[in-house]
Length: 357
Ligand SMILES: *Cc1c(COP(=O)(O)O)cnc(C)c1O
Ligand code: SF4
Image (cartoon, rainbow, N blue to C red):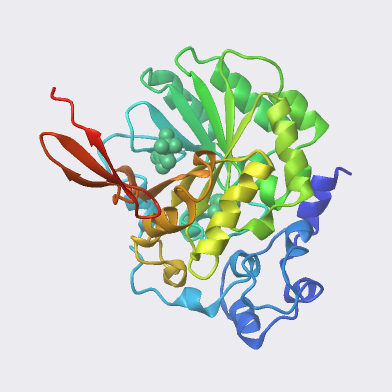
């Protein structure tokens, strides 16, 4: 049997199995036994958890917490609001639209790791929202909408689908003349790097008119291993670009050191930071959320000037009207008819002439 399927079949999703990897605290045990939720991870990702540290950044993303029962700030029916499912435009359940030229295409609700902070929690983790993830219906809609240039295949995790299903999806999308690029959002390079097999590489490989892009989700430097490096290298060697979409998570990566190390370490395994998302106001994840300004402060204090521009993600808040950038704005201190006054990351000041229009 292929190793990645074995990993999925041996999912660490019971208290007994979890105890093989960590010393479970009474609070964690209460979360596991009292929440009615989908949870679990791969044996590989579980092995990266720190046995005796309840604050381990990986553990907090994996083990259900009683705090998920609290919901002061979450927006009810979050996905319906966020993905514009209550608008006049009639779309299949699988298509989420916020932009003119691109859409998110949800093809599965299965994941290798059920992230506790998932903004699709209602669909993927709590499973109280039922959507029809009919691929044919989605493909028909995309075929009929010639303004769509860019399809973002998402889930759940689309790389949990079989090689045959992935091959079929890519082939059908590439047959549509107006599709110029295909993106996959998958956490497999991080939580299940074994998924990038020789046979999947065959499916993704070769030069094509319509390129493939992968964006993964890595939130803490501890999630990056030699196996990640190999999986990313294999994807790149198929002509697939690999980016990262981190989520800003309280107590996990909202300190300067973890945030900087995360972005530096991503580059050491050839992953290009793309976005850092503000943790969305989905129900039951209040405990992961920071103030909105936090992400911009971290970019200012941990990244900009402190490390290469290649390590700079864009900090955005994902809303029902699209992603809104919230980058730090300390650079331009002053401007008059003669000159601009600019400030760098150390607080040093310089001036540049202002050229009239
Ligand atoms: C995030 C998202 C996209 C892609 O946005 P980019 O900024 O192009 O990466 C497209 N559609 C929906 C519904 C999204 O949530
Ligand atoms: S892999 Fe993505 S969709 Fe799946 S639980 Fe994690 S954040 Fe949610």
